Image 1 (cartoon, rainbow, N blue to C red):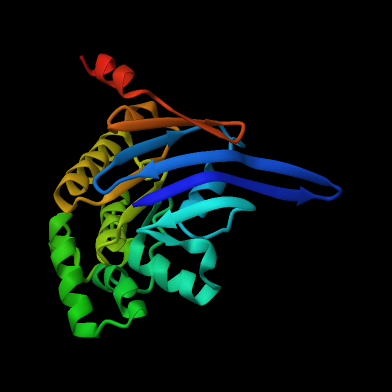
Image 2 (image 1 turned 120 degrees about the vertical axis):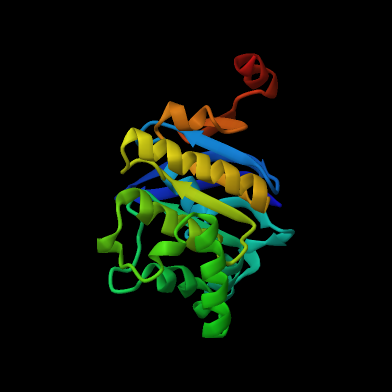
Length: 232
């Protein structure tokens, strides 16, 4: 479904070229639940941007649902991203002047769905994240956990192939973080959507079926045998 092959990303800083990603290979299938951990400066944010079609690699191949994204122009890439990728951010990124319902429906409106159909789908997904009683609340009327539930609903409303979560529990207290993580696990299972989580939190990482570490621009995934031994 999502396949990176020998992805490299180089930035120029004055006269110096800095290689941030050094030949990343990664394959994510439908229904995967994966964490990627790494220290600051390891390249994880750059990798997330490339996975989310927000940035282009310097070299290498990225195929999503069988399509080579390098062949798309910016307009095609934007539409393809809207249809295939959902995002969850540490800071929620909700629009403050819109209600929970309007925030969740917005990606479908951008896609060209009729407003009535978009609102109906938004209500359905908000019910799945236990926010049906907060449809008309603006973000400033919601707790941190409730904001993240709305953000999760927004990420899922368009039935994407993959959801990319950037430190989704980072702004939450430990109890609320665990509630949000359990929600992501349940929705990953029920919706059969791939979820890739960038996190600093080992507690979050350990709850994912696949785990990888990015360091100095290289990605190393923990072997399945080691995961199974750790779970035993």
